[in-house]
Image 1 (cartoon, rainbow, N blue to C red):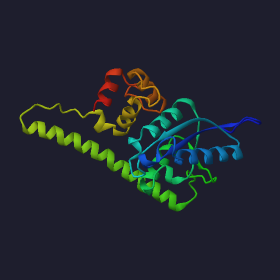
Image 2 (cartoon, rainbow, N blue to C red; image 1 turned 90 degrees about the vertical axis):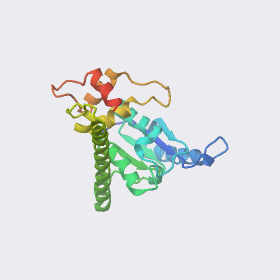
Image 3 (tube, one colour; image 1 turned 120 degrees about the vertical axis):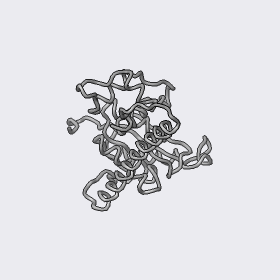
Length: 229
């Protein structure tokens, strides 16, 4: 849905510094990124309503382990801002597959990612980018499969010791993508240190289209099992 005439489009900024040596009041990496993003926002007519920062996070670190990026996703899912501004593509990651995984996570949420030079990183017209996102998506599927495999191996080890193991598959095995989202939503906010309640997590998942077999939000007990999986 486009913005109304005279209405300023909202955006959030994402910053990352790769080394602890670049973090501190006497360092300029985050300032440089912030200034570049702010200058672009002014030129392009965006109002920056929030900023998310991952200090001392390597460009090779998985997207899902970054507290700043996780908070960015939480903000996007809760208030409808659909534009993310970064200094350049390397702020997501220097590793191309990791970079595309982050961008893919935002594309799936209907988000546009713009650099301070005006490049649209979420553009799907570039065949090379489309191919890389397909590869990144395959890696994400591989990680989900690994999670299921680890759980099965744990059950098999228990059976080998004579311990009776419930045969019914867990949510982590049946719906690993939902479990990953539940775990992310369960993380404490880097700003407040507070966590969502189990019911709040169920409501957020329902808003994303993840509900139980009855078509209703998951119960708190099921959410608890997911985040503890």
